[in-house]
Image (tube, rainbow, N blue to C red; front, side):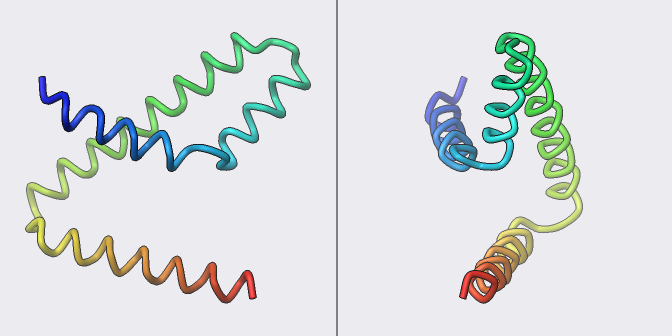
Length: 90
């Protein structure tokens, strides 16, 4: 098992998910339902399925499109989203 890849992926996803709308939704649902275990299990299952879809699409994409192009497209999309967020906040 590639532990370096495991921990770097865990760290990136963990930091990206802190304080996002998913976490706030889980907090709200837990407070309103008073059933933290059920909310935890459902939110965890949803994140697992969403991640599975991302991994499957990524794997299929890498089989067809060279990695260099995928990296450049992803970087461009992050820049565009950052600019959009910048102008929306200003």
